[in-house]
Length: 230
Image 1 (cartoon, helix red, strand yellow):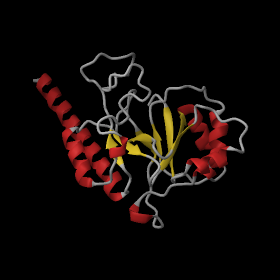
Image 2: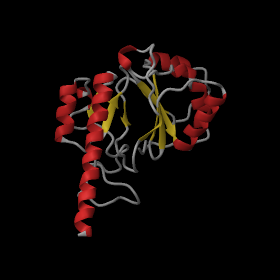
Image 3: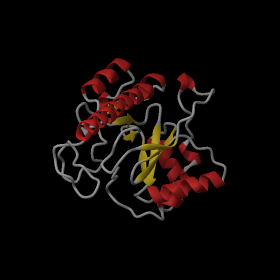
Image 4: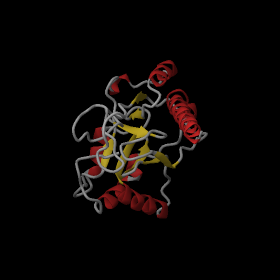
């Protein structure tokens, strides 16, 4: 009897998680007009790679962002169309929600320890922050869209920029809650807040130029690396 009840609870939790992913994807696409696409997810039949890490369903060895990247459909298919979103997450209810950056929203990310320092610095300076996503190993700070030219001009004033600091602009992507990543759950460290001054009820986003100094200073203290390791 206990086994039956345990299975029922597990199935109930899985249904809630799947509903939460669909509802979140619809909110991002339909209400906030952010383009989303389903992530590739995990090979749940495969073996675990180390503590707390499942192999990516793309089957690439040492995938840089296990599970939390688009594959089929690819990033170019990212959309705001609620009908497409509903179709995708009805057929793949466990798929992580991947945001295509560079259109209505971009991002900057850095290792979790450095990210915490950056947030503390910005709060002390009175810098207004927008939404911040915590992954098991990194912090993703969502910002207003920026071009590579704009970013290059901003970074030109710095002698050195750590490679652990990543910029997610046009052609990039990040995972959004309540998705799961290779190491655990993504969550809102600072939830999105709707501002009356923004269009279509989307959350307010800061300009990247107001955050770069604190991000670079914090990133200098974090080890560089090639893997994003969501």
